Image (cartoon, rainbow, N blue to C red; front, side, top):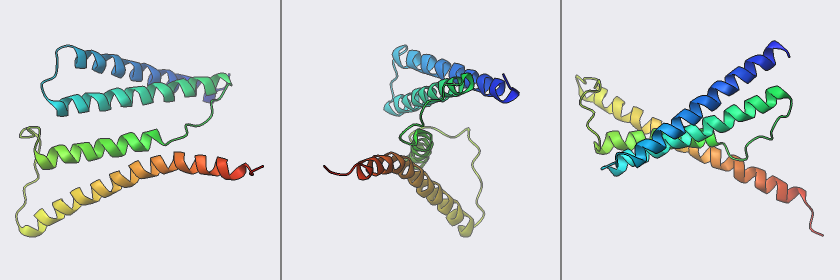
Length: 153
């Protein structure tokens, strides 16, 4: 076994372990104690989805290191999760649904600085939406390519 395969197996095992731990911990935290806030429930479900994604990526890495590579995922799940989580965090911050008083707020000295911070939030939201749509488009494009490759009989 080469160094590359051993490294891939170790990274895959670490990702699978971290994903399984995230899934188990956050599923248990959803069940006990019950959450009182729907936004906290959504955050827990995001972390469960990230854990499932890490588990799948880790198992794919282990199988590739063994010599039995799995086909690529149809949709860009990493992009979709990252983009939707960033949009969720922007919504939490914009609507002030969670108390972020302990978080470092950048002080603005004039109106130009406050507008630039607002522009940054807008750019982050647009980039996040592009990430989500590109992840979805990856799966739709593959399906369209497969149907176009098969001629009608």
